[in-house]
Image (cartoon, rainbow, N blue to C red; front, side, top):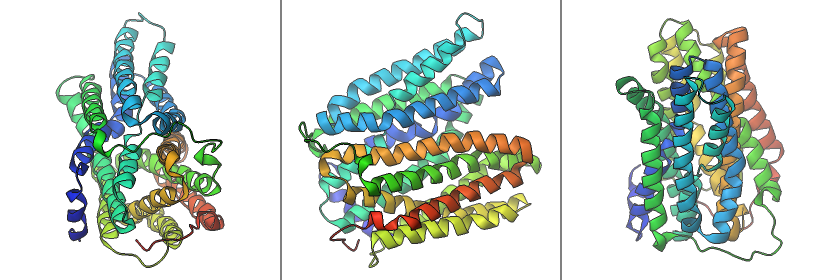
Length: 401
């Protein structure tokens, strides 16, 4: 299974942008929990902490396609360097505002303003890493394997990031997690931007092409991944409550790791295979399995059995995401690839924000076990929308990758 991945890193320049991209985007799973832990520790308000984190997430979702468009037009390096420096300053301002708010030295709205600025200057580095893979690899089979590798890397980040921030917060102080996030984001992104040899060329004049979201297939994929993001966001918060309801709050991390491990393992397997069926067929099947895989979660009432159910539920996540990014790479003109990839990431992030809010509300109202019904409904919605609109993602001259 590891064999196909070995050949990826022989291409000149690949190792550099993969490592820098991993470091630079590692904080994507650290910011939300870092903000919540900081503001909760200082103000004692979960509601305020959740609202600021949601503000940051929504700003990330709104700004993602805009920064992607700027990158397509001016190039990755020229946009990333000033943006990441502004991002670091915005997060620093957020920490200062949080500290000052403890003494009522600044009004509450400054927290939301700093959170919005932090999100608006956030960088969808995973999309840009995938755009570089598309630029340096001509072989569709290798590109399929590369996207699979990146999906597994994302899962590693989502498993390790929250635990890392929590450990820093407990061991040092409430600011430590966000300080680490700033250090990783700035250093990794600046290193990534400095690697000009693998950077896709900028396209200053692209005529009246408009936005990739106007492409029907990209709009469909964005809608599907919005629903999938709602599943991810709701499952995260509901699972924490599920563990607490069953007297095993400390097991929440293991439960969330189970679903991420299922996704990572299936992603490695999926990327190692040479597929004969089309991307469209794989996408529809992945969505169907995604909805079916969540069904057992609705029935679980034991933490140990729930871990197995969540592992099974995770098995279809990476293959579906990998196929979605591959479809975008085929559907979007090369001059708009960064923005096209960013629309998918934005849809997932926006879905996560909505899912986190809805999952928390429903858990308070109906309990964790019943709240999983929302996650299941979102998975069904993703499958139905994907199946109904699958003709829109049919790609001409499909390769068998």
